[in-house]
Amino acid sequence: PWMPFHKKMLFMISKIQCKYQNIVFYAIDADFFKNLCTRFEVDQIPTVIIRSETKELKRVVGITLTSAFKKIFYDILNK
Image (cartoon, rainbow, N blue to C red; front, side, top):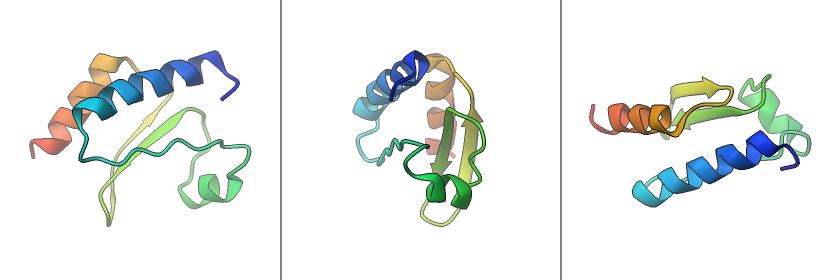
C-alpha cells in the first residue's frame, strides 16, 4: 500500500472490477501475508493472478496498462 505504483494498480483494478462485477478481486499486502505469497509463488511485486476455482488462468507480473488488463479479462471471459 505504500508504493505509488501499487496504488495505481489498485485504482486500475478497481475500474476493471466495476465492469466485471461477477469476479471477486483480492489485493494483499505481501509483507503481511508472506504465507500466501509462498503458497502462490509470488516473488515479484506487483503480481496479479487470475484464477478459476480450480486453476491459475493467467499471471501478470509488473506494472501493466489498463488496456492490457482489459484484453486479458476479455480473452478469458470469452473462451
